[in-house]
Image (cartoon, rainbow, N blue to C red; front, side, top):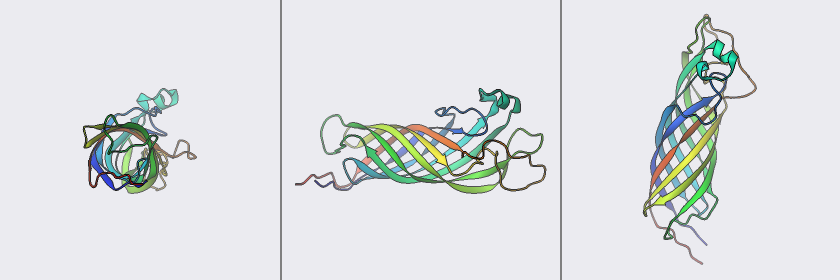
Length: 214
């Protein structure tokens, strides 16, 4: 049975948090606003191509950690990021947008993300990270969510999206450059930084309606 092209475009809104070598390590702890746009191309009743652009601020502070050595260290940072992501969204149940009645399903998503951020560092004797220069990095997104149709044209989704990055310096803990009075690197160099988006999507569906043919 075939599935025709049906498109979705809409907004993403929620919060972000960071997990790494500075601050608390709670995996779902949104503290800064995250917002952007999202697009989906539903090529089958079970999977869709998906792309998004989301902007947020990542920050954390040792004062919020439950680890005593971080409380004593009292470091903090803030970093603005803009992330572009593309990949495949897979629904656990058939999601035929042409059928009547209640329509909902849990889903997962993964692909590749590319984001910009600022390289940070700490000066000797200072506790707040300083900006060095802009940089970019890749991340692997792992999304888990639930979506439901509202009316005939709108879809509402609620999701948690963890990003495993390929950098260890979002927080300034492991800089690879040299500047005057820079404090030594610290933390676990064998694990990269993570950040998490927790939020909702609201999309509008348009295009040729689904057609199932023998």
